Amino acid sequence: MRIETTILIIAFVVTVILGFIIIPILRKFKVGQIERDDGPQSHLKKQGTPTMGGIIMIITMILLVIGVYVFLSIKENNDIANKLVPMLILTLGFGVIGFIDDFKKLVLKNTEGLKPSYKMLGLLIISVIYVIYLIYGLHLGTETYIPFLKQYITMPLILYIPFAIFVILATTNAINLTDGIDGLSSSVSVIIVTCLTLIGIAFKVQEVSIFGSIVIGAILGFLMFNLHPAKVFMGDTGSLLLGGVISALALYLKMPLLLIVIAFIPVIETISVIIQVLYFKKTGKRFFKMAPLHHHFELSGWKENKVVIVFSLITLVLCIIGLNIV
Image 1 (spheres, rainbow, N blue to C red):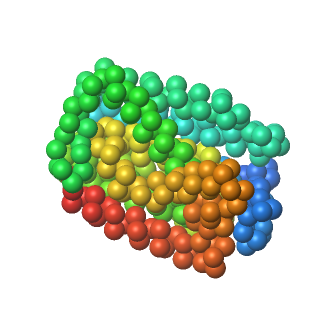
Image 2 (cartoon, rainbow, N blue to C red):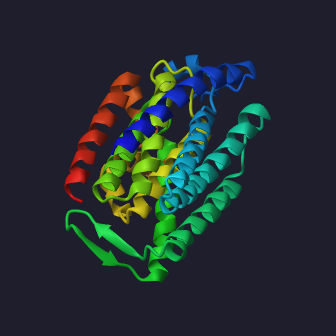
Image 3 (cartoon, rainbow, N blue to C red):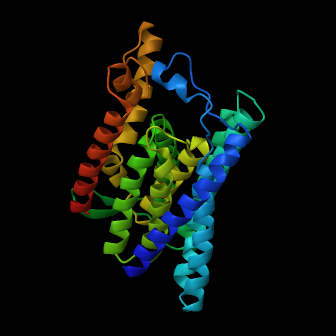
């Protein structure tokens, strides 16, 4: 476990250093947050805060995976080294799609950004490639762990492939919706990734524990700048990246259904948006004061820090439960 701890610390330090370098660059080029007029009034003062900060985590992940790859190759542990690359490619692929969306909105001043259909197509293509790699490249099979029952079921291939793709797309979208308050998505995500990493350590899946440790260090380093009041936001670059990480690790461990428990906050954030849309279409009224759910609590009088703390504590408790049902 010593290598995971070392990697986590190095990733944290690298991310903090990159933060001090990249944030001023984003500020110089005026890559700033655009706040909605109909959102919480307290958010208007965030207008212009540097965003697209997810690029900091992307660079850290690339540097650390390369470094670990070289280290493991020297140690003649090529099998683990080679398995890190596909997880990096999936998460970077999602991060790049988010980056393109952010770049069009914030740098090119195209308010529409990347067209939703193009964005979904890109995410779909990357998801399909990753799922096919897991099945045919790593021969992991279609076994899926059922929480609480503590047993695996083997899904028919024709059902597993669309199911796995749905897990990736749904998780990515859920983490994206959770990003809306200083430090919320980062805090929730780092707890979920830590849970999955600990499962990787317990099951001796070293590629998961190593990659997870890199991501944990990167998120914690990013949180140094993202906690309230945030000096930088991750943008779609970061939220899509983290959604990719979480889904990649869960599928690799054959535990995508565990996300229903440990990623309950992103799940309920997504459900709140669905309820809001359906209810408004049917009645012309809002079910929540504002969706996603964290904005509802904000408009109900909660401070940003309270929302982050409560949602993070709920995630922590659910992750502890998750560790006890695997």
